[in-house]
Length: 120
Image 1 (cartoon, rainbow, N blue to C red):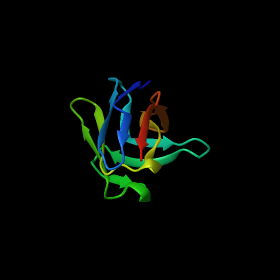
Image 2 (tube, rainbow, N blue to C red; image 1 turned 120 degrees about the vertical axis):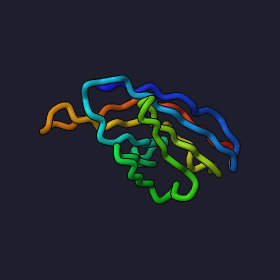
Image 3 (cartoon, one colour; image 1 turned 90 degrees about the horizontal axis):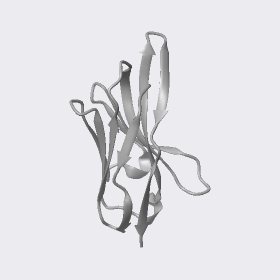
Image 4 (cartoon, helix red, strand yellow; image 1 turned 180 degrees about the horizontal axis):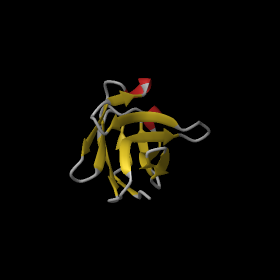
């Protein structure tokens, strides 16, 4: 099992910045990648940013150039730096970890979510 604890979030004005953190519990499972997803009211959950255990990153089109995902492997923590925030970024942000428990099984684990609200 992998447990994820998120921090950060809250209310910010448009154009402002915010940083989210997600700490993964120590586990015998090998974490292959960690990511941030978000879900706004009435919308599907969407990928915001992903980072693999080799450092490769991928971003959703709407956040490219504004958001940066990074990780501290020593702390088993992933960060999401969000700059130039827009009202459309308002959503619940969820941390995700994809971990391998056996050579043939990978599972997804989710944090509890943290609300980000951007006021215009």
